Image (cartoon, rainbow, N blue to C red; front, side, top):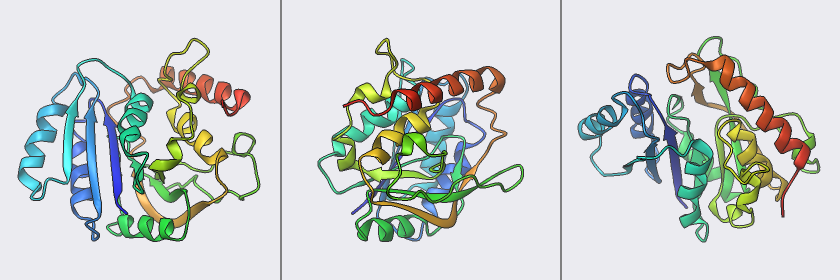
Length: 236
């Protein structure tokens, strides 16, 4: 069993070295990571490559640059699909955030060894240490339950095989650009009652990220996506 971190990112040149360091410092080596630069307009690409040269010794982290922007959700799903016939664990980190617990990989592997198919952890905001993640009962409909599975979001790659891409697209068939966390996790959560919340703080959410200077506008798009996804429910 291996944890495959997928990191969609854009314009994160100031944040990405800390993200890479948080991966390299993991005490458990059973992980790999793919960083996907979604056509950044700053020096993200060169910052990633130069920091990987300095810190990476065993090639656990690979890098891909998109020349056409796809946004986070599409990148996550497309890079997860090739592993859906495996026993791998997919773990999503936003490019401007980072892990804050060196035992994260071990905690995840132990949770999945117990038969879980979706696992998430406690996190903290950079501005006040807040954590909005919490447990979710096994017998509830995730679409009708308050949002619980914020960072760190992880799932068995094999579970994705049972989810149509229509769940990740709007009524026009276009991939969601915002609100991807709920658009990604709610379909997965609805397919299994084998869910686990880890109360250890493993993720640092940099809410003051430099990658989203126009947060007010993007928040409107995010809420629209979330409301649409929840009202539509699971698409078979």
